[in-house]
Image 1: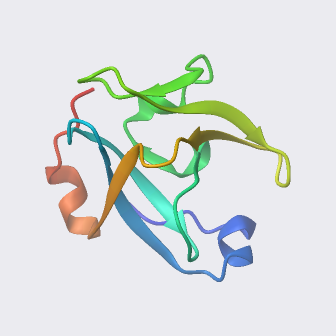
Image 2: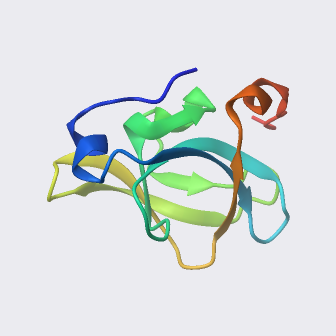
Length: 110
């Protein structure tokens, strides 16, 4: 479990952290994500989603909570960088910074 270190990370200042994302409605853990750079979380890049791997499937057009079926975001292409993303709806997810050694202990209901 190491951070992806590519030109996108370097463009954002090289500051990365792991985030545990929760559904704002039911509190269910949804994903573990590598956030690069400062600022709020507006989109999830497919290549930065660590777990669950099923979210990275290009056939998934919607980002949905598995527990309460709430629509959290939609699949799109970020035109500036030509990368696949989930564009998050405002207030749909909450996040918590986690340490690398706690990632494998987290049970994501897939």
